[in-house]
Length: 158
Image 1 (cartoon, helix red, strand yellow):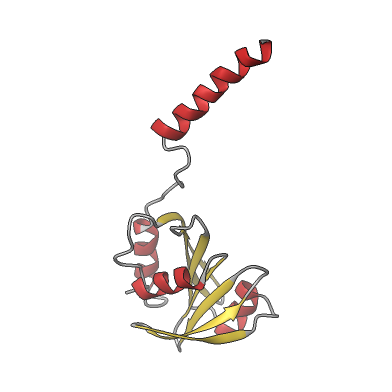
Image 2: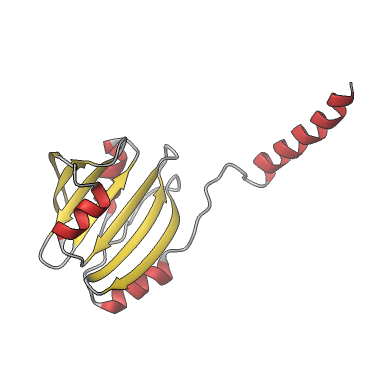
């Protein structure tokens, strides 16, 4: 009986948090200032997703310059509530990929999108990545999610 006196208010508070305060909704950030900073750096052509539905949430955005290049990282939560990271960098591809995917990453196939032909890689345990590399930048979309969600994000890049 005394335990019920404690559990009922806790259950009511938890229900209020989830229903009225959207407690289960992922935290979203505005990536626009970070994307603008990356564009102004002129280190590489910046791609951003266009037309993703409301089930996608931007959870983080950072831009850093280093002596070997600049890197823009945008974190997303996909419709399945899985994390996906979009990495765009002017760091040389042979330096960036072992850092992002591990040295043991293996190519698994290709995916064609409006931005070019992307290469599918195995990455860290449970993760897959799509990689687009050209002379001025490398774009990596990596996550612990289905390939269809990686392809949806890649397909939305403009």
